[in-house]
Image (tube, protein in one colour):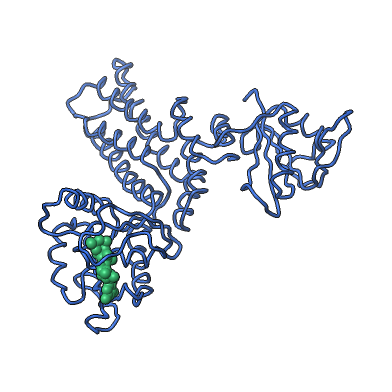
Amino acid sequence: MSADTIAAIVTPYGRAAVGIIRISGPLVKPISKELLGDLPPPRHASYRHFMIRQAQNNSHIIDSGIAIFFPAPHSYTGEDVLELQGHGNSILQRNLLQEIFRRGGRQAQPGEFSKRAFLNQRIDLTQAEAVAALIASNSTKSAQAALRSMHGNFSRCVNEIVSLVDNLRASVEAGIDFADEEDVPVVSPDKLRDEFLKIQGKIDTLLIQAARGAQLNEGFTLAIIGPPNSGKSTLFNQLVGNDASIVHNQPGTTRDRIREQIRLGEREIRITDTAGLHAHSDDMVEQKGMDLTRSEIAQSDHLIVVVTDDNHSAVQDILPLVPLQLMPHLTVVYNKADLTGAPIEYIPPPPYARIRICAHNGNGIPLLMDQLEKQMDSIKDNGSPFWARQRHITALQAAQEICQKHDLCATAEITAELLHQCSDQLSEITSTAERDELLDKIFSQFCIGK
Ligand SMILES: Nc1nc2c(ncn2[C@@H]2O[C@H](COP(=O)(O)OP(=O)(O)OP(=O)(O)O)[C@@H](O)[C@H]2O)c(=O)[nH]1
Ligand SMILES: [Mg+2]
């Protein structure tokens, strides 16, 4: 339990119908008695005046609202917690907070409530991280995945593998420690191989699921590529809704990557305009721009290839630059339909989705957005069972590598040591081994009040 009492406004700053202050720690009871006149009954919403002390020790009502007291250990942090739900006026809330500080509380750091919940074993590290992910989620699917992690789905899968590893290690070590005793069975090589295969299979599955969950978290990326002057920047500006990128009839106008966030359906997407790609350029700056475009292609989940409607074959120059796995996530745009007079339309695959538009006047943009939304649906939201982040993937990969080192000819001591290392790596995901630096890094990414 922590020695100090922390407090923060947990609702967003500004004006709102309701503003909530959360207090956690050993001074909650005395602070409650002074602010509210009493300690409200546990876990009941109680209407109270919130009072602050003035000169000559007179108290005056600063606000009124609902107070809820959550006694330790049955609270979010595992400590005594008081929540004051007053009016959402930031001046009132700050005055109330100052009063709490005068009475011994201090400002909570970002993520400090969740850190205490973790340290008091109310939640494990993965669940705590999922709380921050849930708050930051930018789509319903990623919010649902974060919620599943918060409810412990990911942790349960990890813990199940840790138990398998630890049980096997216990059997192997028993064989070493009690080698002479007849009633302690030695793990046979066949059994050992089967158990290792089982563990590896479970780690592999979890790794795939975690990678999918991590992608959800990172959001979607979309790049607009194509030959110079095809209208990439014009299309980009139409999609982002402002003139973020320079449009000009001179080929080679865009040289840097220009990035914006857009909303497509319920999803936040990072969209990038790129320098036009063509076979050869003596211009060093243009060459650098094309290098950036190539690296953008590699980082993208989806590509829009823009060519002009009078030159469809220009797509063939771009396709060799598209990695095979991205081929299903490609939309080819035939732009400048106003010049050919061909209809604005969606031309279904195969071999890839094609749409004829006129970026200049915006014709076909809603059709394109509709199509992109459908294609995005098929990329990542394919049932991630939970949210995860790179830290978890790294630990799973390390555990996988350790398992792969296992050699059936190895001594029981070496096998036991490998299992020990594997268990440690996996346990880092839900981390019971408290490492201050890692914890500080993780919790500092939270918002204040959580
Ligand atoms: N007629 C017509 N002109 C267009 C259309 N879209 C873009 N343009 C024009 O084509 C020229 C090039 O447009 P940009 O958007 O700068 O092309 P870009 O592909 O970004 O070019 P770079 O950055 O040089 O690679 C500009 O003069 C645009 O006004 C269109 O749908 N119809
Ligand atoms: Mg451009």
